[in-house]
Image 1 (cartoon, rainbow, N blue to C red):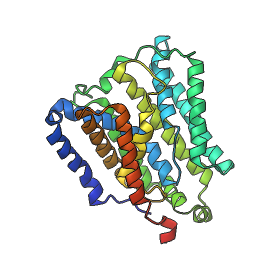
Image 2 (image 1 turned 180 degrees about the vertical axis):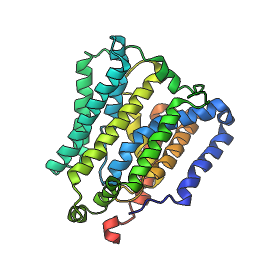
Image 3 (image 1 turned 90 degrees about the vertical axis):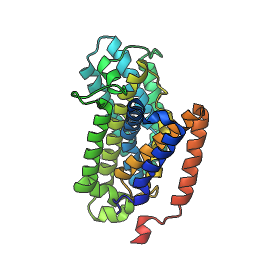
Image 4 (image 1 turned 45 degrees about the vertical axis):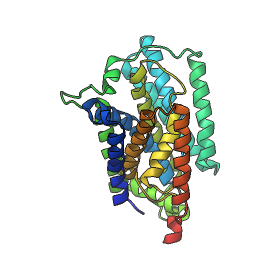
Length: 314
């Protein structure tokens, strides 16, 4: 398995920031830097699940739907008098259910996670719209808005809370990958399913953990996104399908599974956010941004797709 981060990957965010600074000098202001970090934090949290899904040789297409679910339930239920803790508990339970569905169904029936997560995503989106009867308006707690504000602070420090949350999540994820049994099992399952079973790895359990963690992180990103507009949209997570995949691929985690890790994805997140910000600076619309991200994914898949699977290199 490979858990190291190459110099090329670590230097890519620096190079992107330099390009961004030259093209759009305003990014060098405190507000500009904090804006980049907040946007990176939301994408970075959402990309945790995509990273682990790719590491086990799968993919998670339910991330955008899970983001939309949390983003809609927060303001809708808060406006109805629900406490924030109650809403978080409900979102957590639903996220666990989504992770269980993805992990169990793909294991029991031998279906590719792409198909399973796509079906689950459709169910989640439809279920949310039915539950709120199409009314997705409402209010967002003020501290959520403050947490994603470039001018926000955490415990007196001039750093938005969303960035602090990302740092804590990233540290925990990396420790789990490198220092725990489940982390080693994630790499083992992605490297060779048969060998993993012989090593007493339980594929279903690993998949359930991976997709559940991914759903919880995606819903966390959805809650944070509620602070940007104060409103809600079931489709707010749509751009994150391409963005999370781009971040994972740009970071260098193998789409064949068994190699890479979240440390690489962090670099990919910073590059992806910088690239998107650069496009916005050149007045490129959201639709064309998706086109550019799609081209980037295809190019990188072509490059990384030439690598042999880990199992073939052993």
